[in-house]
Amino acid sequence: MKRRNRRTLTGVCASILLIICLLPHAAAADEQNPQPYLISVKDTGAVGNGTTNDTAAFHKALELAADQPTGAVVTIPPGTYLMDLNDPLLVTSNIKVVGVGNPVLKFTRFPGGEEFGYEAFWLSGNQITLEGITIDANNLLIRGVGVHTGSKDIQIKNCTIMQITQPSNPDHPNYNALLSGILIYGNTNRVTIENSNISHISAIHPNPIARGILVWAEPDQPYAQNVNITGNTFSYITPREDADAIYFDKAKDGTPQTNSLIQNNQIHHVGKRGIKIAAPGVTIKNNHITNSYNGDNHYRFYPIVDPIPQDMFSGISVYASHVTVTGNVIDGIGSYYAAIEADLDVLTDIIIEKNTISNGATADYSDSNGIRLGNIINFKVADNRIINMKSGIFSPIDSKQSGIISNNTISNVRYGILFLDPKQAYQASKVKVENNKIAANQNRILSLPNLD
Image 1: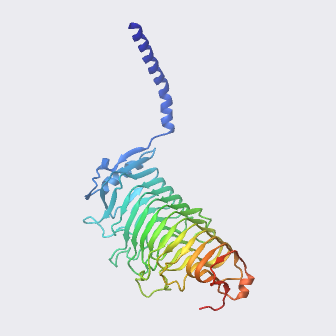
Image 2: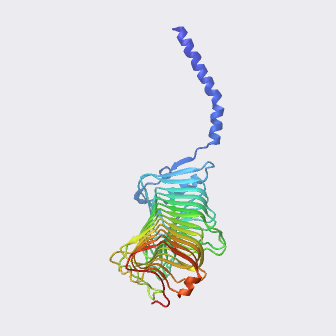
Image 3: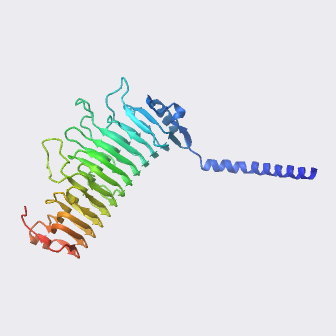
């Protein structure tokens, strides 16, 4: 018995000695891999009962997080949190704001406050994440999230951003403001928006502009780089005059390629366009854009500038060089002016391939184009499937145009491939047309001058 105790004691001493020896190594490991600071908004007084003003508690939690040298995770438990519309939530570097159980942040006006606000979240810094949060702007803000100048490595995922509009007071400075669910400023890099829902963004006053996501060409700043917009749903973005789900703002000449990706998004009930790209170096891949209108997408404001009879202007508009449009489905019950268009100024290196394009079976598509091409140098339009259009592929061709139109399948159209300029312009161009499958008994490849 005594011998067993002696052995046990010896073993315990050895274990203690081993732990003591290992402690410096463990401390060194912790120094090499510091753990982020964890805090809940309820630790700083948030209630989340839908009636209490929780703004101060959120700011306190974010301020504590900002003071942590190893970074921080701010958690938001389930509940509805009322937030002051005049006091956007500032999130700085190395902070993750994570919702648990889909909490709702509802922005509202409190007694004595301004009648209308600006944005819900202000992201400024590096290594910032918003995850699992519903941002309800409550029709009292013009923006959900701003990714501000100079920010890098930003993630917005599994969030909902909704109910954004303009104030009703014509004297308010935001009366005619541009609206956006998310606005990405200049000099930003590696911004990812994924698996989120952006909906009910409605401009309600003249000269209306509404965007689901806007990548802004901020003056005097480099254009955003490496923006990835993946797996999101966009809906109810209006009005018809100028409402787009995703818009890369017009870049100034000489802007380098943005190396950006728009992929696997679902877009429906968007008034004008699904996607508009006016900056170089964007790939638009495997998105599904649905035209939800058939004779019921009305203009709201008069006089109307360049009105169109079709239900939507386009599914995808390309107004910049070095853009690839591949594997997208563009369909719905209504008609498009051009389901895909690349028709602005002189563009180069445009690829439009493997897309499925159609107008609705009962829509008026008497003046509608599947793919509309402008003055493009070095383009490829291949392996697309196009149905229910006046023209499958249309181009007011220029003699400088060059590219290939091949292996497209086109049916239920008046014109399969239509070049609008005189035939000699088509012959002088460097456009190769080959191996396209155009349904029997339909006009195939035509070059018609002065067609109405």
